[in-house]
Image (cartoon, rainbow, N blue to C red; front, side, top):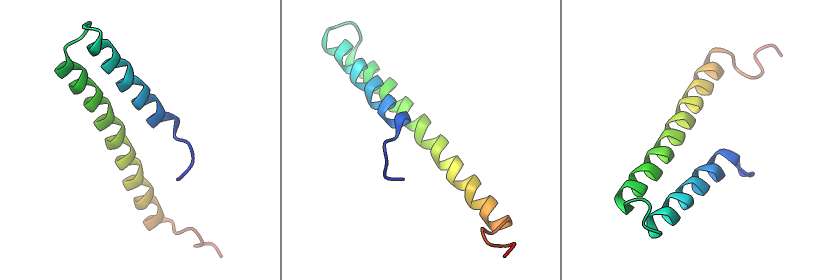
Length: 67
């Protein structure tokens, strides 16, 4: 939970690259911002779905149900 998260590191690297491109004039800043935010939203939504799924699984099959 508190360790390195390669997915989020990738999101931030992607965003940084977009902003570097925008500062260089290769991409409008508002487009860079929209793309970076869309990628972050995508990853957060995926993570939320995984948390919800694991909570559902745990409600069906408690961790120590067999003990």
